[in-house]
Image 1 (cartoon, rainbow, N blue to C red):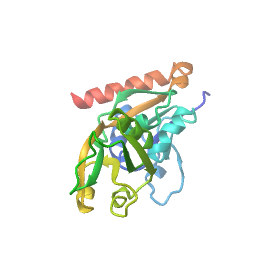
Image 2: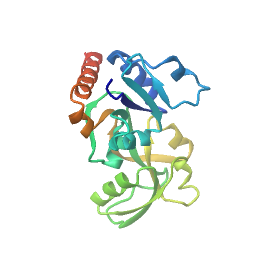
Image 3: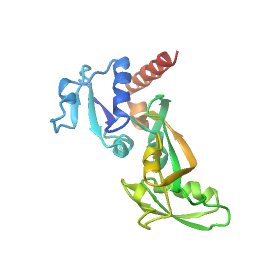
Image 4: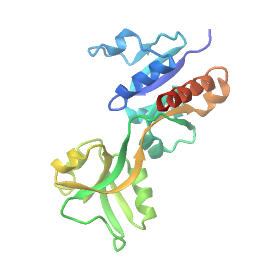
Length: 218
């Protein structure tokens, strides 16, 4: 029997949209996947050679890049942040739409050309530094994993860079979206070595996802 294919899927906002897409590809998790009291992280599927692992979104890219999983689903924000050379992202899945944005206090202007330094609270330090560097501004990034919106109020940083969907959380914390850094959607990601070495299985799965996305858009 060949080694099983491990498919990494993210907890959180993308998961609910990813499950119907997996079903269209013919992958359905076992019943214990939907048991909210289960502490399991590895799940069988209706495909005997495919198992799912459910991990944090940022960890999906790491599992796939290092070959612990062969494929995964993750937002383009995560792909851009890590920029792993071992990752191949061949399919925009058309789900998980939001944007990565710069936000600051509603009563202050966005950083301008006259500024050379800014302190930013973010879960995306690499992306944030690159974006500000392109504007000629050095960004000092304070890494936070949540509650970014209170950082300006408490003086930790003057601005934040975070995912925005409706913008309601910003408004409720007296912040305003000032610049869109990138539009975000979920991508199918593949370990490059697995794509080559498991050419009888992995490329065919990629093509099934591409077809499923095309059918949904038709």
